[in-house]
Image 1 (tube, rainbow, N blue to C red):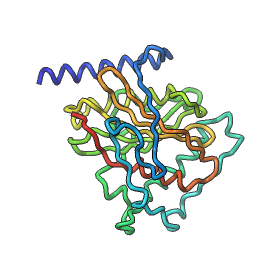
Image 2 (image 1 turned 180 degrees about the horizontal axis):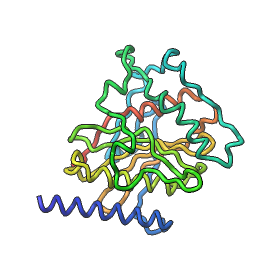
Image 3 (image 1 turned 120 degrees about the horizontal axis):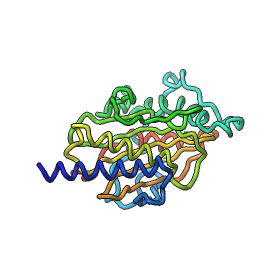
Length: 259
């Protein structure tokens, strides 16, 4: 028990130190390994299985939202005038995408929504009573966390969410992405459901300006933050195949060794 407690404290210390470097914009001192999150045409992982902690649903198991589900959902194409307001662009995309992803149905049971058939539960930041906020706003919003999906199951410390950043897409990891990951991982670690786990896997749908989005998967390996990063998907115009891929991962199942 004492060893487990010491390991727990050590992981928290590493995450807090990483968070400090990010806030101080001292990214050069971060111990991060970033790998490409290569996917097959079917949306399944094409990377080292030892690095996989979320198992996407098979593409052929998904039914897109039916017209009745979409009646209240309006996809708004990118507005070039949002060039100077990347957060507004990201927010506009999520206003459609969040409800849309939650409206996917199973091909095996078209009467029910997939998200309700799984053990994932949606939470807002306020319900977590977090010690460190999962958002930041000054004169304008810098970043905010939405669409948190949590498992009420001690076997799985996994957690998923979406991040809206006031930034344009970049091949490099954004400071907002790193801050969310380290902060959410630390908050998740102190929860009773995750106390016994050495690894806290996090899946992030990262939305940026001009309707750009990518998938991130992250976990802490000792003192190293390991981040898998997909390519950037362009949703300035509607792309149902990309929506399907995002649904595969946002509705994915927990896998991997975490204890």
